[in-house]
Amino acid sequence: MATIKDIAQLAGVSIATVSRVLNYDTTLSVSDETKKRIFEAAEELSYKKKPAKRQDSGRIAVLQWYTEKEELEDLYYMSIRLGVENRCRHQGLQLVKYFQDNYEELREDTELQGLIAIGKFSCKQVGELRSITKNIVFVDTSPDEEQFDSIVIDFEKATKKVLDHFIEKGHKQIGYIGGKEEFKDKTSAIEDAREETFKRYLTEKGIFDKCYMYNGKFSADDGHALMKQAIGEHGDNLPTAFFAGNDSIAVGALRALLEEGIAVPDRVNIIGVNDISISKYVFPTLSTVKVYTELMGETAVDTLLERIEGRKTAKKILIATKLIIRNSSF
Image (tube, rainbow, N blue to C red; front, top):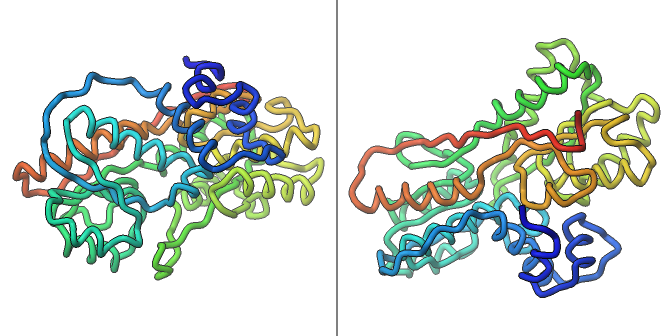
């Protein structure tokens, strides 16, 4: 495994700066560009590189749901994007990047052979993309399984893995800290499979308690604030385990617990989702559901190439997950 020193050397900053950025230290004043270099260095060092092919195979686009600033708060999409970029280099593909508000630029790109859409898109947005190109792969969402290729995670299964682990370890008071999202065009809120599965599954087990659920944004800052709120509301009755909707939230929640002198995992266990690169460098190291984000990006490129080469039928690809227990839980 790469060390913090390796990340510091690649990013061109001090070891102390890397450590504080990876732990989302809010007292550290550094630019977003520096944070971006550090996070991308951490992802790159965890990525298994393959030799690049030296050929020009065409031009594709990636449409990003998150802005670069938003990526710094939730590294899930950054990791997927880097998987796309690495696979394109390997395949000799020219890749151009757009954000969600650049539909007209996409439409004017006459050399475009296909599109990878990373994130969540409303029906209206999907229609706009379909009018630009018929070769589209959606990553992290599946708007129409009969028409479009998609690369997705079974978050219902991933959530059950975490809850089964907690229940097997004897936890009966289990909390949830997650995020609420809506489409960028503000047409509607997005249902989150992690939250819905958490409520349904624990209700079936007879141990669901609504007062243990907290929602904000998928960021470390909100994870910190929501855990502080939970501590203030429940005191000594704070749940013994928390499922965090992503690793960024879990990192913020860990910081709040440590600030309040609450022992992790002796008093509170916490498990996140994604296994982003920083989860191995925070203290205590984060237990998490590993989502193979780089594989999602790679698979999206390969799937798009199949479409470009003439495949007609759509396919939905489910990427496996794996529960990884580190120091933040038993």
